[in-house]
Image (cartoon, rainbow over all chains, first blue to last red; front, side, top):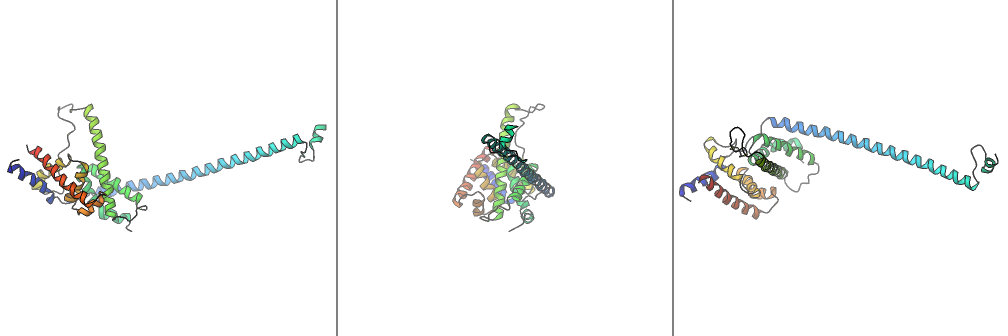
Length: 100
Length: 174
């Protein structure tokens, strides 16, 4: 490597000493805040959706459990009928029903 | 604990300057800065004060810049095969534009341009150490914290960066 090239390389490396910090453009402020605000509103939508999802799940669970209870009571009535120990709300027993 | 507004006001120029040294295109630097501060905003509540807040923000900025450059290189490699040359001029379409740092003094612009061109050709870790110490003027200790490594490792990276840069610059001069 010649002395000339060597000097040139060192001068290039030394040029960092003459670099001042670049200033952010003034447009950056507005862009950053707009991005943050849009993310904030996205967050609100997501949490709203989450709430709706929880409500829907609770409604489905309620509907399923009600159906399960109705089905259970029907099964119970059927088995009571089979045993002959069923008594209806109007006072009929299973024997009365069979005799009819 | 600093609020987001305070962090942004204190660090926006430093973050922009660091990112610009990496990506060397002001529009890209602005885009990355937005992502950096968005991440800071989203994670400020979870931030545990193990390191200085500026170190944490610098780390995000460095990682985002490197991610961007990796993405750009991948895209460039793909584009290289699809269109090697510009259709109209036959000129090579994917060469890096000659970057002029806005903070450089006029008489040094040409030399600094070569420096940034050479910086693009050295390994990521060496580049990071060089930018943080010689351009951003961080101390070796601060740079080690940003890079999540030891002081000795940073010293060695700086030496290797200088060696690599000398080699690249020699190639440019010849």
